[in-house]
Image 1 (cartoon, rainbow, N blue to C red):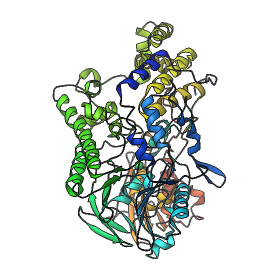
Image 2: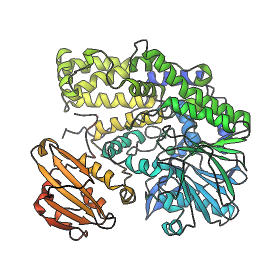
Image 3: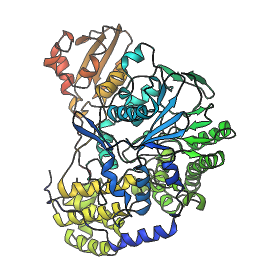
Image 4: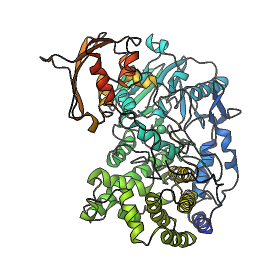
Length: 634
Ligand SMILES: [Zn+2]
């Protein structure tokens, strides 16, 4: 552990940041207030107060963003301030008669589509209590309609995690409430948070600023929405898969025509056209941000080219008929001409980033070089919904480079670099020692070159983590970069880094993995999750053969641990295993995730045949992931 600096108050913005903001105020079309009209259009009622609790714990507090009503202070990028003020507009809204939205109760929106008898819930938020509060708000103003269907537009947690707040498992099991989702939904919904889940969750803490105070010097929003709710997270698997573009379904008298969009913003995603309302739901593929080609919490790179293609296809399919476009984040766009132009600009945005990155990489430019020179055409630069509040041109361009070319930029100088600590010691030594670097860094800070200060002081902190002056100045530098950032997630990341440099690690504030999700994992996914926890070097010399007999489904898996690798097969084996575990598939998640230790196996309903010590050796080879790993220090 490193020494802590004392808790320091947040600093004011420097003149360099204030000047950058003034320039932005002059260059962007702040007098265009169409978005504010659209974000308030159809307003019916707000949740008063705008707070949701679960067992006395606040899991959503939109009122904490009341400060956004004023003018942007120098500590917040005015463009991000504007976006956050829009996202903080909360309540129940009529999109068109028969379609309603509750916005501002989570990172995402929930939409309510009225049918003959009841209401279909489209994308029930991230956790149950905000979803229930949204349904309640809807019912208070639209009548006590029963939920007659649920739709998940895609496999991201903020679009299904609150489902238990709007429907019960019994009603789904009884066939009373169908749940529609794109093919592949469950597999992607549960696997995304498993293999790299610990690291993604730790980094998500930086990206969404969960540990930051709300306020002009803290978290002001995440661009896509204000932040993530922290209520009860769950999942009920879909009962009806949508598999093909053009597929039509009718639920409670509501006609729906689907467009598949796999491998776009999410691996399983779909758009929905409601012909009776002439309304097109774009899931999360056309929102009021430049979205992420690669989210900074870490993920697999998305396909910008396919994404743009689906937007073109949506225009081709419905552009002649639709009267409005809405999505599961932000506010709708009304009128055919405006809606189609909105879709076309979003298409141009992702296509331009993709195509120009490829053009430039074929001229030999590398990711960081392309990110620096690539500029959007004026029509996109001045379209508020195309600005980088969530994704950014900078990190999306690097992601597109990464998708095609990988981590290596082709320059052998970068083929075998020292890792950060080893490089840092050498840099600081070559630059004349820590004191000399800090003195020069302070001059660059005063000149407003914060990007450079972050680079060199990061070396000092990685070479000498106890150097308090370097840590303080690096924290101040991250803070100024945060104040300057137009991107909500960049601001959160910078301010989170500053917070940890000043007062130590805040760990992982929010972990969205629940028993509900684990219960949906297949045995194969669970074994994969175990395999990535095997401590390789410690297990080089282990050789274990285990049989897992899932008594309720009648499947036997042979697990082999050798050379630090845990593999599995269902093929019949001739050799005898060291140990056989007989258990039901419902008990498997707890055993496989290490929630049950060997002493507790019998109580968990597991029968062990053979050498119980073999099981102990397998469990001993597993490592617990670290949800508190260092980021801004070595
Ligand atoms: Zn979302």
